[in-house]
Image 1 (cartoon, rainbow, N blue to C red):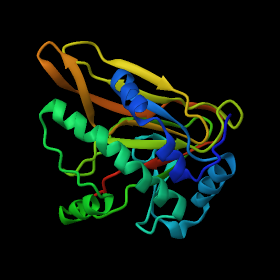
Image 2: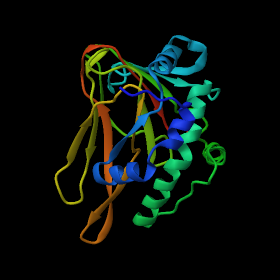
Image 3: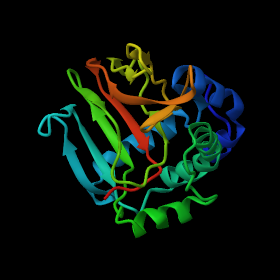
Image 4: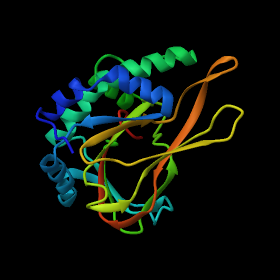
Length: 240
């Protein structure tokens, strides 16, 4: 695997975002080039073991979300997590505004991530939604959408922190899209170490006979067959 020679933020800026936007339109998700090298991936994954960095831990089996655990960061994000999120926002914002225009929806997201989060907080969504996920053998994640209130940013990113086929098997990322007046369409993607997968939080524009329709999308993770699969989830709105 080719590893980045730039900082993670520079790697984000160097990605071919028009091509990624086209892939999002065609498939509902898009894999970025490497944003973290293997050492950086391990450093982020190891943050899971420091409980002072997190506001809560969720046992997915307990809540019938699947099986596995994830931890929500506090707002005091570690530097690599904060820098990645800040670097991704302006590129995703371009796609978000384009999608809103196609669907005839308002585009309430300002140029600045800080301003957008201030709006979330004013609406009562005040808790960090950034997560580290940890799946062991037999774990999986049920299909869902990460909606935490009325303030929603329509795109999010998950970054693989372990090497598929070496550190774990199975654990493919899953998307299921409900097509207008048609059967649902499923997509699975292997989450390569250090790469980010961009996908929709709620729905996306899909061409229909009457122009553009909103295609609802849910995401999840298939069963991990062996090993340990860890990932970083970056959401661009906060939780209530």
